[in-house]
Length: 239
Image 1 (spheres, helix red, strand yellow):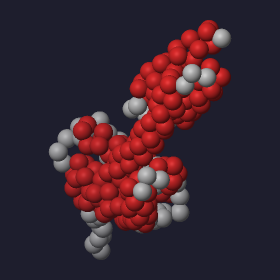
Image 2: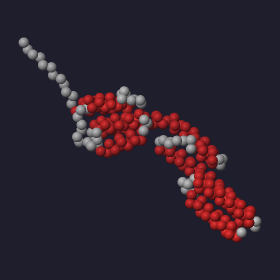
Image 3: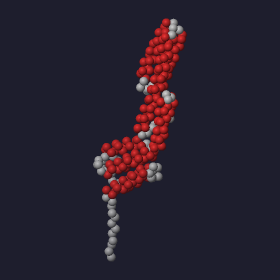
Image 4: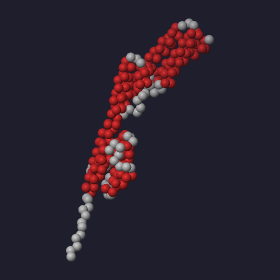
């Protein structure tokens, strides 16, 4: 009587890598996650890929699970940083391919996630440009402040430039008003009226310095304030 022995095919390392690649892409393809918990997905990956690549300094399994967690909370910037760092440490081969494809998937999901916000920002930017042209600077600044942490970077830069333009335009308008009052004070011979107008000019400049300390015009405002205070001091000494 012959005995029949069953032989099982053991998957090669390349086959395991392909399985891991498919699993990785499936993780990032699901916006809400394909596993019931990070613990479960980590266990499954380790079962499919029991051998670590000793040539690379990156624990790919742990990296992918951490990145997947960041994607679920929409922390795309941090996820991209981790993948970029891992890419720099990984030699050419299957691991690097997995990292590159994961990065592409994150960028695609990030773009989709921020699309409604980008449309909203574009509308606000259009409104703000109109308000600046109409010299309604306070309204323009208030409108821009409704935007919280704009993304991606190009939108963030545009919002910052518009806000700086609105603030500087407002400062220049108010500086001119303070200067007009200051010149009137210099021309008057009434000491009490002169002092009153100098106080008004100083109040305008002080308010601007307190409200916009990060403006590129802050040093100009401080110099203007020094001139007003010196003049005011001389008037008070003469009384």
